[in-house]
Amino acid sequence: MAGAKGRRKAEDAPGADATPDTRERIFLAAERLFAERGFDGVSVRDIVEAASANLAAISYHFGSKSELLLEIFRTRAKELNRERRARLREAEARHGGVPPLADILRALMGPPILWRDPASGRDTASRFISRALAEVTPDLRKILESDVRHLRLFVDALARALPQLSEDEVCWALHFTSGLPHQCTDTNFRRLEALSGGGCDTRDVAAALERAVRYALGGVEALAAARAPEGEAQAS
Image (cartoon, rainbow, N blue to C red; front, side, top):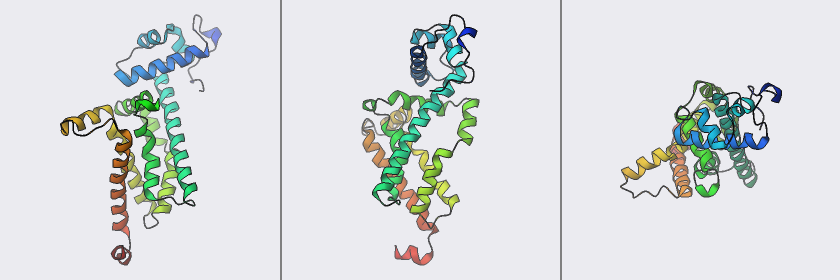
């Protein structure tokens, strides 16, 4: 992972543990603590104690607690979006460049939902992302409001699958669909369990993904049908 802008040279940080292993320990400890307690609930001392590092190490490796949060978020978001792209490319390869709408939606929503399974090894990263989005800091808000490059592939894929929709309508569809994985956070799953009296099994994230895909598919298809020419809508 690239160093944060606040990172200092070793000679400028006397006493800092400058080893790569220490950087990784800090990264993972902070990710877990932020996921559990939120940004404001974790101190620099909490992080270095959990990472078995000294106080100077965070300043040396990341610059500050805020820059550490951003580094973790950028790293995990990049990994998440890389997996989304790979799933979309696989679907396109199977279907001559124009995969079914359900496959596009599954590629978009699959990683953030499936990561919640402890067996994935990515559940801490998933909880961290959910917590960061729920308790967004000002610096993180700037990233979220402007960095949408990773979504352009999905805009293009949806536009090919739904030629009757304008790009603006495709963006609306993508916007609402992108929100569905956030209903699979720990808090929202607990609300669902309470609502259903324990009847909804939220442990099966693969089943949750398929429910989300069916729900999104119905909404996007309804939007497309509403925008189709009258004769085409009657024919369908």
